[in-house]
Length: 301
Length: 332
Image (cartoon, rainbow over all chains, first blue to last red; front, side):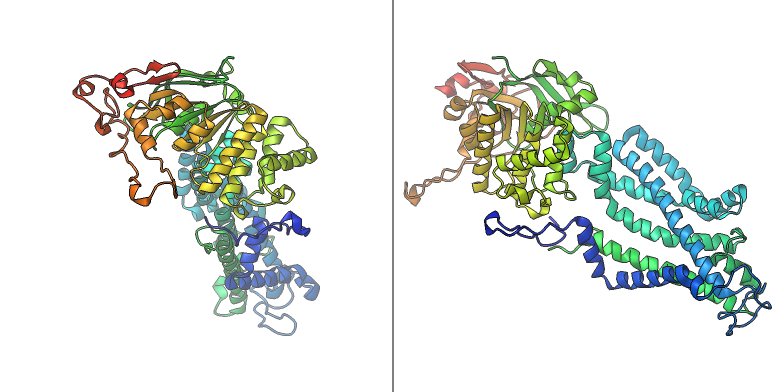
């Protein structure tokens, strides 16, 4: 059997020393994560990005929607990263747009995982007719091209940040559902699940306390990666002109300035780089988390 | 004294992909009284574990009970509602599994897992539960239980884990404990400890035990009654002492011949005999004909056996029944 770490021999009672509290699986996974160089790099980069959007306005107090100068002002002492086609400050846009992009990414990923977990857990646990019905629904969502489907939803319900977030969640939960379903079906027949049932566990307890924690590792990894995908998604929607025009976001900056890329490279390159770095850092973190908690990759002790 | 558990003519079948039902277990009957131990013996694939799972109503998908009754204190388990069944599991009947390495949830401490069972069945508060968990761990002879409570399963050895499993199975104070090969995965020395522990706990709690095993030594030591299963059919049953001492069915004799006897320094090595074996395998599901299931492997089979159907389980002595056409010749 694979163990998270070498078993710590517990101190014998007679030695009089208190036994070291056994490390919980979460803590062990965190320690494992710190050993993955790419994961730590990604985490550092992500922290820098989050800190930048959090304390940026203090250091650089400019409204991203204000017209601070002429259009296409190159980077200078006044506007550090220049201005866009309307004369709005690019750096201020990066700071405030980052908030929106990261928030959309995180919330959309949460929605994705919440729907995916619920559908997958019910299908995998109960099997039979419930499983067949839920798989059919999942497949229905899966065959719709996600970007197109999200565009339809946003056009129908309005170009607001909340609508965009919900739309991204609604089109991207299928893979999480399939993953959870597969994990639940695998776990359902394991000995400790049978033992728990034999001791009198009910369905709710089995699903939430026995199967769910054991099914979580791959789901956590896919949740981490889902944040990056959602940020890209928001960028894609905004790029196509379906972003929220009243809220600055990285995708919106890209979309609005893309026609002027040869006149004012700074208005496109900087938000593009920001999206690239944010998604890269999240992918690296996801990789590190995968190394730390994926039982198939875990080193055998 | 009336029996705590009565299994009457239990038949279990497996539904194939085309819908036909292949018999797995045929007309099995036995009973256990409170405080007594009943052993089910047989090779792998004889239907022992299916019997246990049928009693727990935890048969895998595709397996169905095709006939018979299972009565726990005169309540028919097979017709109990799922809700009633859930409260019976752990409280009326509980089960110890074969593989202690995989039968505990790896993500929770053993204390948490036992406390959960207490919470379901005894409505214990958390402080009270913790005390009871420690008492249970002490009862299954785990050293330093105050510290082991906080251990995760991977930090315990196989024997310790099996003790935790026993503690968990006993937490709901069940009237009937099914032990499905509780020692198969353990060292020989630990096996003896676990069997002794089960016997001691039975003395204290008056729990009835259904012991599933292929260890006839354990049967001789622990069980009061025994049923020998072969290919889903009971071929010999009765008082454990008399079955182990005077086995009548060729299969039971064969099984006993397979038990190694270490008599170091008692006989010279030259005189040691080879360990016996029963050639062949249990016939697979679906390949079991109406004639004696053991026919193909039986050393004592005669023309008579070949020409007849599976013999009925008939008594040859008080509390000893055999299903064999040549039982009177062989018993002699």
